[in-house]
Structures are given as C-alpha cells and as structure tokens.
Amino acid sequence: MATHPQGSFQFIDHTADAGILVKAPTLEGMFETAALGFSELITRVDSLNCLIQRQFKLQEDDIETLLVSWLQELLYLLDTEGLIFGRFQVNLKALTLEATAWGEVFNPEIHTLKTEIKAVTYHQLEVVEDDQGWEAQVIFDI
Image (cartoon, rainbow, N blue to C red):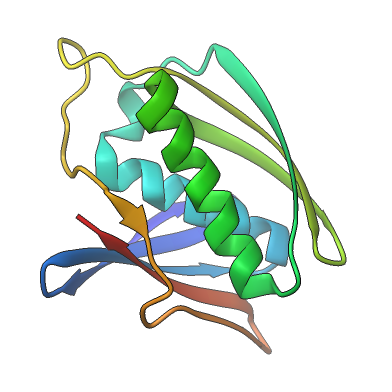
C-alpha cells in the first residue's frame, strides 16, 4: 500500500484490467490519492518533474461519476498532450471539483511505462464514507 499525506492506495489485480483501492480521511484527499494511484499505475510518480500546471473544474450529478470524470480528464490529457501528473490539489463543494495538477510530458527515454490505461470504467466502482473517512475502488481497462 502506497501512502502520501492525503491518503493511501493499493493496486487491485483484476482479470484483463487494473484497479486501485483508495483510502483517505477526507473526500478531497480521496480524489487526490485516486489521481496519484492512477498516475502510479502508468509510471513511477517519483520520477516526474512536476513543472507543468493545469486547472480543472468539473461538475457531476453524483460523487461516483465525479470521480470517474476526474480520472477521465487525466487520461484525456495523457492521450492528447502526453501529460502525466504527480501532484494534485483538489477542492470540492457539493458535486463540483476544482483542482490543480502538476506534472510533465511523458518521455519514454526518462519514464518507464508500467501500464497503458485505455479507459476509466464504472465496473465495480465504489465510493463509500465510513467512520475513518473515504474509500474508493476504481477499475481501469488496460
């Protein structure tokens, strides 16, 4: 299980897919940690120079869809601009996410590709709150 100040994540083995199980004391921390787990599935986050900054604003009808949309935005930027992020700051108000992410362009000469993610799925998606905070499970198509 990998930890950082906002929470922890672990990878989930899943037939022909990959997943993460995220735990964090706050909902914002859960979104930040899910993004970090997503990036760590792709490459070693500690190899990133987080010099490029991007802003995000998303709104959805429920927290599960908001989490999927957040991760889909990160995947879209990886697919279209080659950007991979290693640091995140998320603010949530109701079902609106405002976030800043820092990263760099993925360079195969510098970064090791661990997993190629094709899509963020709703398969076995879970977001729950308990007495210790928030937990989420996300499965990715690889």
